[in-house]
Image 1: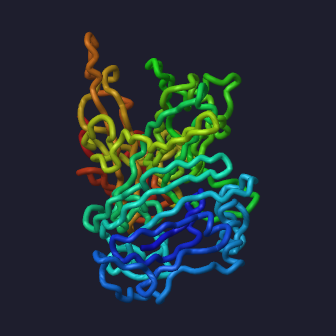
Image 2: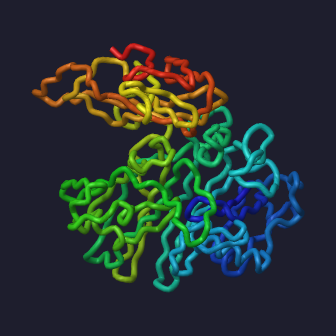
Image 3: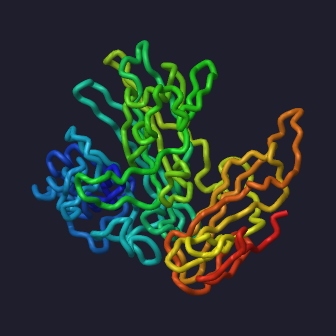
Length: 478
């Protein structure tokens, strides 16, 4: 198997191979790795074998013994990368968050592989036909947090993802999708984006609650100049809190619990790919000491930098009490990662109209709208059907333009709607004039002829060209 270490911004640092004989157990002690630079030795000549093990045999491209001790320079570079300092692993750039406490932060992934290699999931040739990674589902696992100073320990199952080489196509959500350009080649089941978990604070729970959170969005973060702006993730869409008497509070992005309200960035609860969030750093989430909290990990649309409104996540809680007891719990997912057309709530609506919009550039007559080269182009979708402005509940109304394939533009729609059927409500089918989703090409377009596709609709347009004020459209929304 291939073990890969990632910083808390989702940037890989170290990978190593482990030889398992079948019905085998391997323990990766991260403290031993960072403090002593030791990776347990495995191999067809050194790994233990039992009566149910596979026969010992060399594995392609593997040394007789895997693992051992890291050179001091590599160990120091690894520590620097995971503490937010400049690292030789990234040509002196930073790859993690500099929090100034000397603690290493990040996460690891484990994949079944066909052979040993020096590659990781971000590199070409790792996935796909003949790639390093296998699609066999063979692994189980667990993890522990151990705090010897306080005599605390907590554990949970590792996050387990099913692999299927034939289940995903380009544009589908997959676990490694952010690192493989969304081409689906990794074939790994994606994680859900909406999670809940318990909060316990006060009384015997003197140590309160810590949250362990993984949050993955597209595009992936890259190494950056140290001392510059941290490439944070976009702000989470919402956080909702309940106490134990069923009182709910929409606490984020509504900042009414704090006066004066801080900026969104200063209270963003999940700014990194991986983090452990202490209870005292997000006290405004939970006005009452006991209850539960819900996270929608998708980004707020205004702050989205290319994710298309999609996020993957995992959430767990750890609690400590009276300086004597502790427990860890995995959170509960409330959304499906592979839901049809991205509709975790509501029903997907058919695309009824596809438009490409122009702009009224300076220096041209009033009312003339143009599509010009060197500009990102806005596209607009409307769902098919005459919906009610008063009774249509919009769960999601967004779209995303995939990176162009030549002059072909593929648009992914998320038109997730439902009818509010509250007793006594009067629904007027006024065809909801503002029921539309807009998105932009991920890069500027050059001169040429382009074809945009969304659902069953296809629209061809020219760059440059002049279009009507309401756009050049195809389809019939009603």
